[in-house]
Image (cartoon, rainbow, N blue to C red; front, side, top):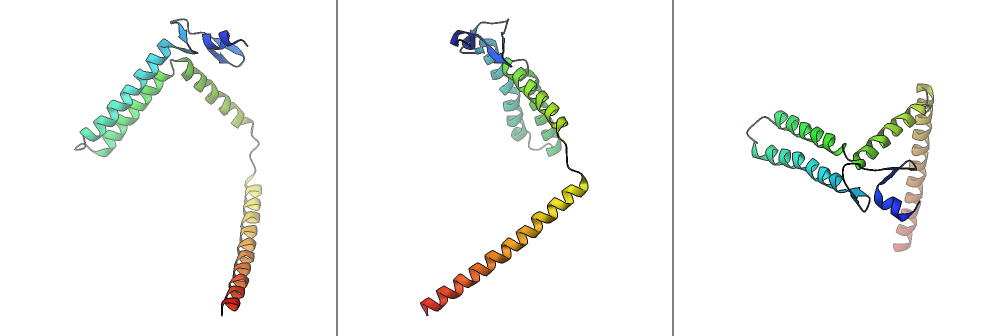
Length: 141
C-alpha cells in the first residue's frame, strides 16, 4: 500500500475506509478530530459536576458520570477510529466464542496441581533459606 493511500484515510482489514464528509490530514479526518474533541467535553463536564454538586448523593453523581461516559462513547463511535474500535470489539467477542473452555473437573484438577507445586516449592525454598542462614551463622560466629 502506498503512503498516499495510508495518508488519505484509515486502513481497515486491508480495505481503505474514506471519510466522505471531510478531507483528511495524516490519516485522521478533520471531522473525526473535531468529534473526538467534542467527545471529551461531556466527561470533563461530568467530572466537574461530580465535585461541584458534592452535596447530592454519591450514587446520583456516579450515574450522571456514567451517562456522560456513554454519551462520549456514542460520539466517539461516529469517527473512523471509533468504528475501528467497535470492529475490534466485535471480532474479539467472536474469537472468545470460539474458545473451548475447560470443564469444571479440568479446572479443579489444574488448580490442585498448581497448589501442590506452590507448596512444594515454598517448602524447598524455606529449606534452602534455612540451610543458607545456618551456614552464614556458622561462618560469622
